[in-house]
Image (cartoon, rainbow, N blue to C red; front, side, top):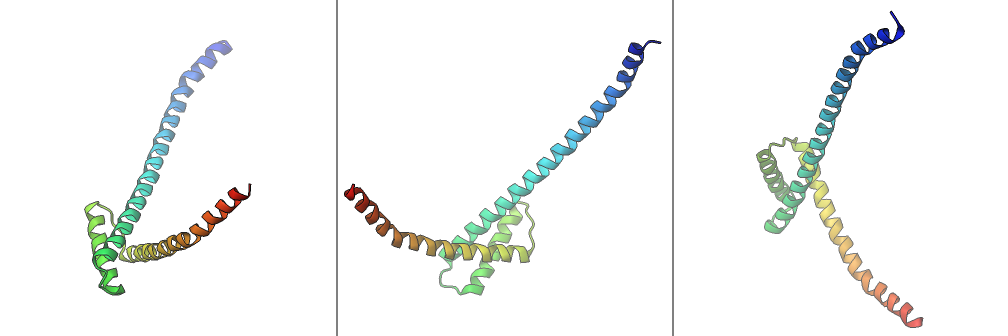
Length: 132
């Protein structure tokens, strides 16, 4: 037997095994990528639903106090998420709603600050242009 025939026989045995291992690795990698994507999409869906529910509750139930608004938001968000097939614990949902409320209040305050600062910035810009 010469070396070429031995090498060809080894390649005939090894190449299908390597191809099988590579196929399995791609399958596992594809499954993991899909799982990560689905988790990210689900988290984004939960965030959007919670943000929208908080805004809705603030607008529709403006006369209610904090605990009643929170209960309305919990109920509505749970209903919507369950309809979408997303399960989330009440504690986690409560935490996300509180965070959305804080963001809503903080965002409103930041917007008011920008409006107050904006005229000064515009005047400064106009002054700089006039000086040139």
